[in-house]
Length: 384
Image (cartoon, rainbow, N blue to C red; front, side, top):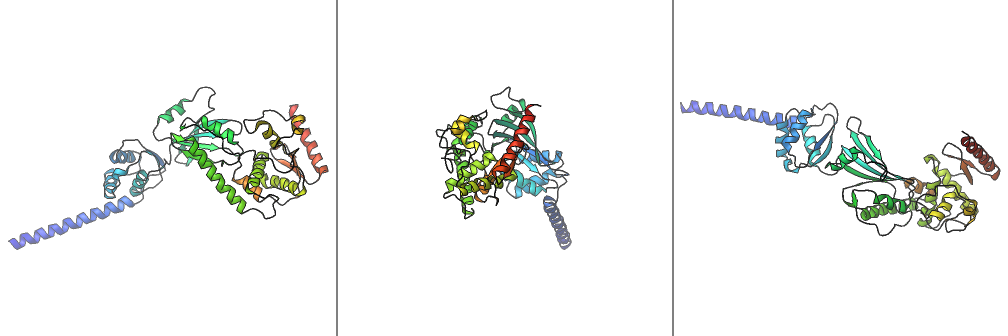
């Protein structure tokens, strides 16, 4: 009898072990299998949340069918206590294992709302935008100019949310003074800037910042980025350039930046100034004259006077030979590259062509004809 009982017990144990092993294999397979999510979603994990709440929200959103299994898997991987607050983009068909990894990895939120502070040449703007998970593109929900009119309710709402991302976008061609002034209006940043950084040495780019970030530290980051870009452009420059130092390359790039209205023309614009330098001609470019008047502090807001074109300053390239005293703006990567590797042309003149670009010329006769066409376009526009 005891042998029979023992035999039955062993059989029962084998069956239970087999079933348990099957459940474990099923659980592992299901945990790592493609999930049911039909299209991407943005999962918001509030501060103080837990894995149970997250798993139930995922079930509600159609991202998982077994929330308890997700919690078991997270426990087994020792990730339950690593849940991070934020907004996380959950891709289509994400497995439970992939979702757990996404919500415990940390770092900046990968979706949700973002506030972009845009610092431009003529004005600064604030844009509030939200990522559309289905297209993975940001959609603008509000925009305003700091100090002008009422602040949109959407901006106030997202500022109070704990997972909003903040970004500072610096336009190419801004001056160091304009950047510092623009940063003063960025209300999520802290600290005073005692000294304006050297002109041309701040890399125009998009920089993500946290609330309370230091303005001084961000400026240092911009300067380090520009040093890298300048060194790269200088190292890869054409050997026969008529410039001797990286500082001169930066000056030339800043002029190209201010004179280029169409991105595709950068190398042609660069070729004009390089050809002029090679021939001993003065650069004769209006943006340098303007910088001599404003020294980069704001915009002139009017046309240049003949007296200003004739007045000697350290930047007026109608009067001085060669390059100006300093850069006249902060050039971007493309203008640095164009200065280092200009197009191969014989152009020494250019003038606006009415489309936002320029008409280029090799001779003064051709240039005068282009100027006449531009004057005609100006007159026609004035009469409209």
